[in-house]
Length: 343
Image (cartoon, helix red, strand yellow):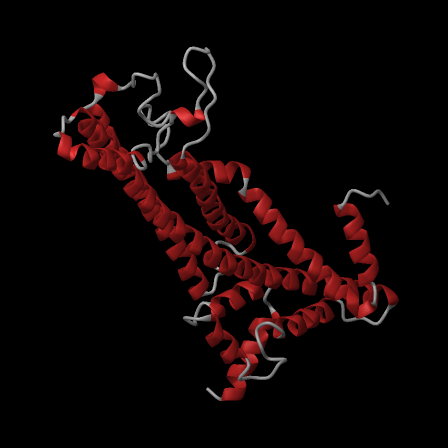
């Protein structure tokens, strides 16, 4: 088949595409390349007008022309309205694709670093907790040890050194509770509780954005993926880092539970301070990723999607209106609506 014939058939096919189908075609082309740079390099090899980010505008304008070909004022008005509607829809979907990719690329970078830091800090906390427990037990043994007079000074030095570490622990200490006997308790979160709280927020953010991507794909792109492949890889790596941190933490909680099972008869110290992190025995500290994902879908995902869609639509409308110099009024009206100022 001659090249010109193929091109005509391709042009005829493109002329029938809806704005959504054109956007899906753009996303599919994006995902043919391992990295974003490959996509941009590929489309710039052709002409500006023939690129997949520009050509649909011309094809949609031709659609409007074909559907309203007359020259009467009514035909011209209908043609212009349809032209604007179709091109605005495609521009909005195209902007949504790039907005999602921009956000996820940034999130993958920052949340990936946060997850790595969380895992590193968790390893440090585990070592501190283990060392603190060991130092406390050794100090108790040394205190009972009866040294000869010649060794007493060395014993005191050893106790002093151990004393600096014996309260390094995940658990509550006398310094963050009111004196026993007052009937009152003042408790501040332990180091590990702070770690759990911070990590939960990170996990929710990561999985909320992944769920938001899926929601956008399902609602606006018929379920077709819209992320660049390298952006998708970055998101997957962040999720793996988060899951690794959670698995490490939950496994260590099991190890602590084994320790406590052997110390069941000594759960309360003489000063009345609990020997475990509050909630640890009940399993409240274990991180439930599936539960966090459920909460993210219920309370966070819709807001992320709405923000992406609104920004893409506002920009698309303003860009298209700029052709007729109506964009400034639209931008101002949209800003007033967003901040709650009545017209």
